[in-house]
Length: 193
Image (tube, rainbow, N blue to C red):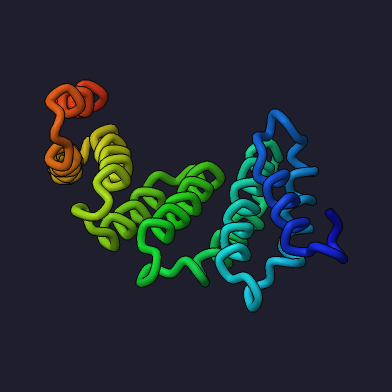
């Protein structure tokens, strides 16, 4: 399979190689594979593939930035590119996950929890608990813990309450009693606050 005779298949292979675990392939090679794929997966011809490849590039560049001494903003660029297709109105959960990845990157490099927490508030305000309870749980619990550490107890309590609602929403969708108990057990630390 080569780019000239089967460009789509070639690009899928390049994307797959670029999305592999960092342990299997060096990070620089992953980025090269993903950049190869994006030459075929253009926004015009394959918008979803283009966006998901950009998201993968965002992940790769954020990993690359963690190992470097200075902030590389390429990860944010590629996440924002992906959000051009994965818009909030069409793909709210994917949009929110990309926004969260940008927030995490900003938090790691800026070391400013206030900026990170403001971004989490923005994301939580944009997505519906009823549609994405596990994602809401992850974000609201993270925000509540940060606020608790900052001694902002009233706002922390508010986000812990959202976390509780998310757990109950997840439990409400499950019919088996043992599966409901598993959700409670996995989130028992939340009930301690």
